[in-house]
Every structure is written in structure tokens, then in C-alpha cells.
Length: 166
Image 1 (cartoon, rainbow, N blue to C red):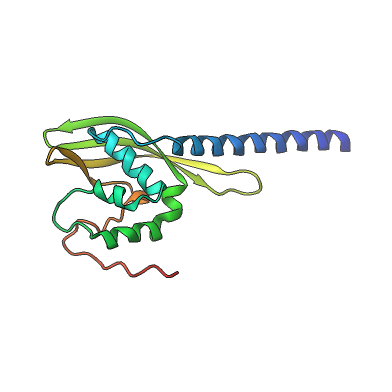
Image 2 (cartoon, rainbow, N blue to C red; image 1 turned 135 degrees about the horizontal axis):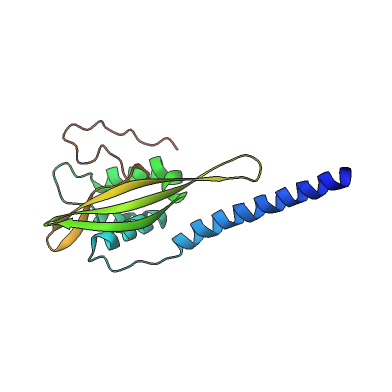
């Protein structure tokens, strides 16, 4: 009886290790991609997320739309402090792009690694959208999912974001 229990336990541990390894491989592979052509809305979304994950703050900031109440570069830098773990533990699959004159919407599937118990981690998956506007011949972001954006940006009456405690 003890021998069978050990065998079952070893099988379960093996499955857990394989599942955890698969999750890590999927998330790492998605981050090994490089920058792509940013002349399309999907290219801008891809490059913005990649820039955040690579701590290329200046490049990520360059993809923001020039609209009223745009955050300053120093306000934008606070995104890294507040969503560091969220943006780095998330992976995004780009879906369809819909363009209507000077506005675009890119469908996204966000995959977020959730810490589990023992050897098991979970991946949460949900649908989101990125909204873009065409300005001066370039596509620029005006809204992204919360892992990659502070929703106080571009609002007329913003609540000031305090400095992140270090």
C-alpha cells in the first residue's frame, strides 16, 4: 500500500513540475520577442508592452497619445513602481484590430501568472482592449489594461499619485 502511495505521489509531483515548467516557458517565450514595426496599432501595443517589460521607459512613453492631461514623463515613471510585478508577470496575446478613421481598437487576451500553493501556479486569462488614436502619421495609445496603465492619466480631474515608498 505504501509503495502505491509513493508511486502516485511521484506521478503528481512530476505533473506539477511539468505544468509549472510549461507556464514559465510560455511566459518567458513571450518576452523573448523583439520590437516590431510600429506603423500599425497592434505593433504599437506590442512594442509598448515590451518596452515596459524591458524597463525602456522612454520608448514606452513615446507611444502615449498627445492629448489633454497626458502624464508627464515623471508621472509615467511611477507606473513602473506601482505595477512592476503586474506588468512583468503578465503576457499578452494580440487579437483583431479594428480601425475607424483616426481611432483603433486592438483586442487583447491578458495572461497573468497567479502564485498558487506548493508547486502549482495558476494562469488567469481575460479579454481586454487597447485604444489608440492616429496622430501626426503615427498610432498612439490612449488606453490600455490596468497592468500597463494608470487610469488617472488623461483625466481632467486627477487624483495625484503619491511617490512610491522605497
